[in-house]
Image (cartoon, rainbow, N blue to C red; front, side, top):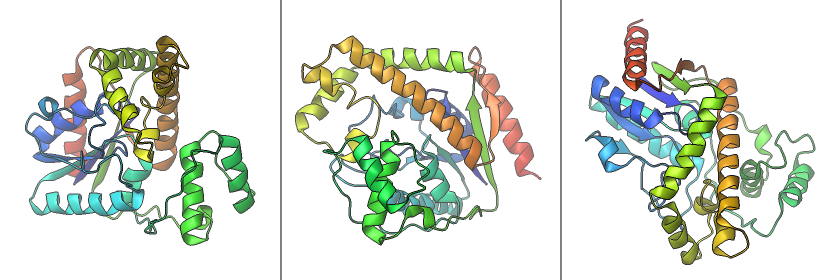
Length: 296
């Protein structure tokens, strides 16, 4: 059995993964594209050693921010971690919000080894979008979804094929996979996300960002997660801190909305309303569901 915990950022996935690992003799596998990088801790909401509670965790802190790490790399690493955990007679628990990574690990997706990565930092979103349209006139990617457009262009650069022509499979590679999703009302989630951003600053986010800024590293690892590039204008003296924080909160809320949309359309998720007053009840509810489902 493999348990997958998905949902928007800030909903409680990390806590649930650890609690289920205790009950299911499990080990946790990272399913977030940004938490593979060392030093990116606060902005990515990476699990702390204290939060792990002694549970083995895999694919966290495995790359430096100067290194490339693609969905192809993750697919290989995650499948190896899954197999290793299953061989020990334990339960793999994948937790994270990067849907493409999770789906690549579990489904019969074939990825090329995309060794060539291009630097698009000098291009605007509109310029990148026009470049992509020349390749695929019916491109089904929003102009402001820069991450996907860059990946589209990189794939074409490596394979000379449009990524939309790549075959994708809806076949799971593993027999017993249970998708668990955590959710709450939009208003409550947005309030939690805003508060979480505030806590990040209390925990030292600005110092973390300043170290990254001073390193002059501007790789995908830095420019993808929300929390670093949003504060660079403040460190450059081009924007006040409160304005940067508001932009960070706004982008976090929009990201959570996109996560909901993706998971609702891409995988068969069993959604659970989070009990924010008594999270143990949510843990018990999910655990009972997993036990019942795995026995079918």
